[in-house]
Image (cartoon, rainbow, N blue to C red; front, side):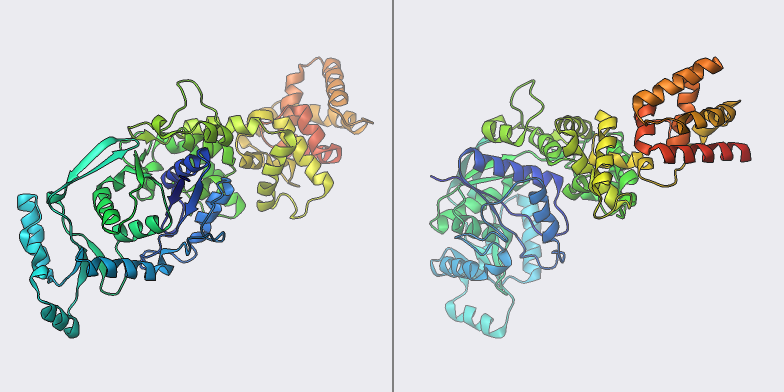
Length: 518
């Protein structure tokens, strides 16, 4: 048997981080077993679908390097892969169930439906009256159809049996069919309901393993009965616990984003959002940590997010934390899925991200950083070799300070003509005492250097400090502020070399002039 898994998102606006964890588990299971991963788009709810919402979903998969074997843009032998294009399949299956007496048209009025609901609340069981449409003769049914009476098609649940599955995560689960309603499976306009469409699709797509969130467990008994009624093989089910928001017992949700903004656990991500998104021309409120797109746009590596998602509710052993995609494929199994809900952990995410960023060469990190400089207008759309070399210099000097690619924007002073001073640091390090006078005396020393290197600058500064009988720290701190505007960053000699001789001299002049003016 060839393993075939699927993920079936609805195009309603974005790719959810919890949904992507589910998709990842499906993808890993398929790859682990040499099977296929199918991407199907559940777009039957036209009122909820958002125009152009498919693009961010597909991009999320592309960015994370999770290629689908069949689906949109790829095709396959079992298409189409959009539910909105599969109407003939649903109609044919519904007509078959109707002809075989396994489904019926229900003409219940809204008042009758409401009465049934109230009866259920009192007894906990479906009332016998819910099948009142089965008492209609063929002539009465035809008359109602001719009259245009509203109807839905219901599946006739066999009442005298148990439905049982062996869930790969939850173990043995069973339901009593006598407690189940006859579910709606088709509207009179020909559009299918979720459970029915899902079964028809999964059967036609030859899906062997349905790996999905545990919230769908309640749908399973009806789906099993539908598989059987259609004469199809029931797939293997695995219901994985949902992803919780950190510090809560609730499923992580876009609806709670405003609450997350106040959460200490999310602070590191929202701080990143406020620092980065406005600089690259994006609305800070347009993206948030519930969306996969957030991580791409703020400079995470696919490896960092995949490591985090792979470790959310799944573990290889008690000690292994850093996992590549290849490692996950080789070692993934449903038996290692944690049975309790697991929290998304921004702090761990950042540690995974930092690890995989440090695994890259300087050149590779520079490639990830350069687009953020371009988006911020600090680097040309078509940068010169000298510009790219400078990016590499900055990245090399920063070392492990670059945790996400957008961190390069913190050091934008390397790429700007004008810098903004940290006001507190300027007063303390430049304007203080005789520092402006010392900077003025040291400037010609720098100007006379024939070589602009770390070694030559450091030797000149030490010699000057000795001649003035001062500590080197005084000048080092002043030069850092004068040349970059910031009290933090790479070593000061690295800063001076990267900024360049002429620019450093100009910035020293500007700092001295400002100190004098204040």
